[in-house]
Amino acid sequence: MASSTNTLARSLLDLCRSRKLTIATAESCTGGLVAGALTDIPGSSDVIDRGFVTYSNDAKHAMLGVETTTLAAFGAVSKETATQMAVGALERAGVDLAVAITGIAGPGGAVPGKPVGLVHFAVAARDGRITTHECRFGAIGRGAVRQRSVIEALRMLMEMARGPKVAKAKRAAVSRVRPRVTRTARRHASKGRRPRG
Image (cartoon, rainbow, N blue to C red; front, side, top):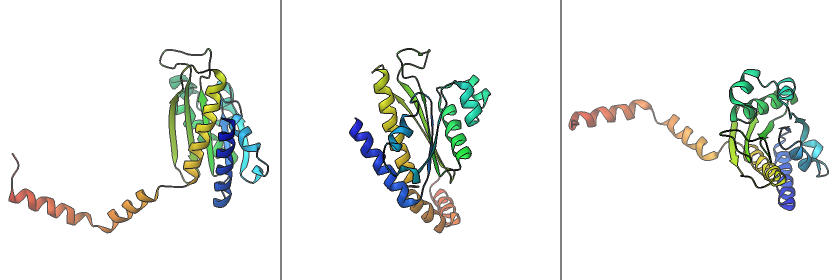
């Protein structure tokens, strides 16, 4: 797993260099392992700006601006908290991409509805894109949950660094070219010829 993490980290750094993107991390259950995986690679300072390790709720609020109401309503391990962590890191670091990880690595810490191995991820981009993901790794051991979380975070950063999907952009361009009036007129015409019912 260490070699796959290193390979993924190198690929991400190369991609970010080619696109002139910078990264910040906001980590809870991984305790800085994502930042560590990236900064293990020489020359990573041209991409990696900083990492926030916000293990407690107070740290999440003070360092990343996670709302206390969010933490109270959804808990530290939630999509909502992960999203605010990523956005907070993005804003405070002034980078292009930020990833956030919050979860229950175990062996303790589980609560009803939130088992050991539950991890929430969020990646925020300077252009406004945000992606979130939930993983339920199960009780595979604290170290394994943390290592798998690092890989997932790197994969999500890689996907975001590639930019918006071209297919979606093409579809949007096509729909802009076709006037809505044409489609509406056709629909009315067909209704007139053959009434429904």
